[in-house]
Image (cartoon, rainbow, N blue to C red; front, top):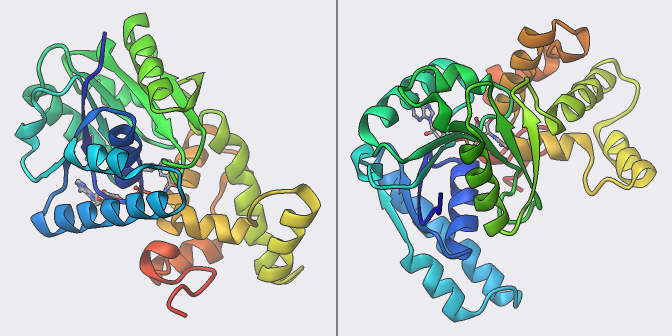
Length: 284
Ligand SMILES: NC(=O)c1ccc[n+]([C@@H]2O[C@H](COP(=O)([O-])OP(=O)(O)OC[C@H]3O[C@@H](n4cnc5c(N)ncnc54)[C@H](O)[C@@H]3O)[C@@H](O)[C@H]2O)c1
């Protein structure tokens, strides 16, 4: 199926990033936020991000203008009815996502593919909320979506080959490398990454080394572009706890059991970059 118009539900870190990637690569994008003020600030954020790319010479002014023209921000979910593909990027909470899938199934045209950007949750649980489980899959972008080169295409037991190949074609048209993975918590990247991030917090909590030394060690010793605490702040500590909880629920492996410090930081609303403070302070 050829995808032209893409709906994005959720205007957080990932919604904004995926909307930008898709609009820059020629797709018509309808971005749905729950409030007009969030929709407006999201468009302002996208304008800023695109302007930066023009300054860096990565995008021409005409390409920026084209991307902005292809983008519209709405609050009514009904505005997504004509989309060929809808990707949800709302909070990592299965109940919220299941409810959204049943709504999207009711609203969207029969041909629409419904996808989730979940990091860990079972895609089949969302598929079974709809009357079109064969047209549901995971399209898992990474953060920041306009920059990161990978997309995981997640195949639940219910998905058709057509759905998976359309999702792959969309990801590739956004300039990404696509890998296909079964519908198992954490897919490839997060199943490997999150035990590492959790163990970094464990090291810090037990006083083995400081935040700065652990981050410096993993950058200098492993060649990673950023250390685990900078990465946790980028992902969002609340999202990270939700991901680890979903991994623990699936596998019951102690490596996935959230380290108490991480959970306490979320309780204190220290979410990382998005709240201005996490392991690092971004107000300074
Ligand atoms: N942050 C990352 O690094 C990352 C990477 C890949 C995938 N993901 C996944 O993408 C999804 C979104 O993550 P994010 O980092 O953009 O989160 P975020 O906290 O930045 O944004 C979440 C969005 O969900 C909305 N929301 C919250 N509660 C809602 C509700 N009850 N109904 C509808 N919308 C609601 C919020 O208003 C916000 O727009 C999650 O499934 C997450 O696992 C995140």
